[in-house]
Structure formats: structure tokens, C-alpha cells
Length: 210
Picture 1 (cartoon, one colour):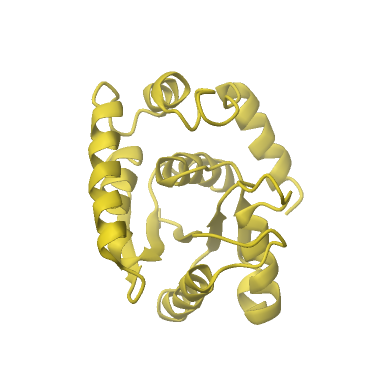
Picture 2: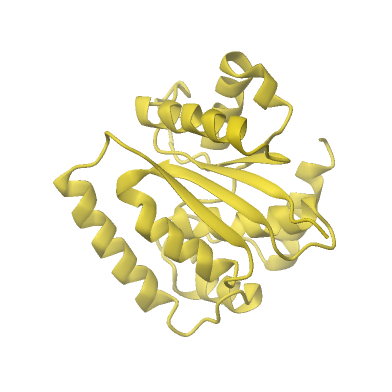
């Protein structure tokens, strides 16, 4: 059975009016180039409504931008507005793909991000997907800095520490770790994430409208 081909676009930032920054727009442009070479079945757009002064989710802002700038890609675009960081991008991507492609547990995935973010993204996606899926992370050049490099090292160290007790590819243990130990999802910094059953129902309701 042929693996579904999926492009996953990770967002960077946007304005209070939902205007994507240059880095996110450039990632979308790279996603379009990747899709022209490796035709995807779905383009999954990741990112939550992180700004207190804007109700628009990053994923929806990307979807709107794609619909105007890349209308042919818009037919494939699916918004995933639950993830609050790279770990969430990978975790919720996995949940969405298993719902979109029932019966499949592995996928051919091209993840689109920036070059300074490639190594951490690759390790996290490989961990969440358990090494079964083919993960290829494409990095956009031109946005790296000493600050971003330092943050990447610190974030990767934190990821390894937080998920040291979880099992690669085991979504239940990964969810448990997110809900208990990750400050973006356990209620420490942002509102506590929903229960696994609630998340599944929400994802089903979102995809029912496609």
C-alpha cells in the first residue's frame, strides 16, 4: 500500500491583523516548490492562535495566504490549529494524518521550516512518528542568527529532557508527557490542553468540513 505524500508547513510569526511575516511567507513559497517536485496528497498547515490581540490561528492565516497567492495548492491545504510549538506540530500532525488517512500508520512527509530549525525538527518528528514514516525536513535559508542557533540548542536539550520517559511513536505516552510536563500544554504558560478523546473529536469535526 503506497504511503500518502504529505507536506507539513511550520509557521513562524504574524501580526495582530493576521498578516504573516516574511519568514512564514517564504516557507510557503518553499512548500510550493517542494510540491511541484513531489506532488503531495495534503498540505498541512500548523499553528495556533497565539496572539492575545488576534483571534486568527497561524494555520488559518497561512491558509488564507495560500488561497490568494497559490490557488492550486489551496485545494490540498488543511489547517491544523492546535500546535503551540514544534513538538505540538509533530504530535498533532500525526493525529491529523491518522484521521485523514484511515488505515495508514506511516507516511512520506516533507516538513517545511527554516534552516536553523532543521535539526531539531527532524529529531522531534522522527520521535513522534516512531521512525516508521519517511521524514524529510526542508530548511529555508536566510533567517538564521546567533540568537536562533542558541535557542535551538536550548530547546532541543529541553525536548530530550522532557520526553526522556516517553516512548518514540507511542502517542499515548507522548500525550501524557505533554499534558503533565510540557509548560505550553500542561497549563503552566498556556491553557491546559484537552483530553485525548476531546482532541480526537475536535479533529474529526474539523476534517468533516473538508
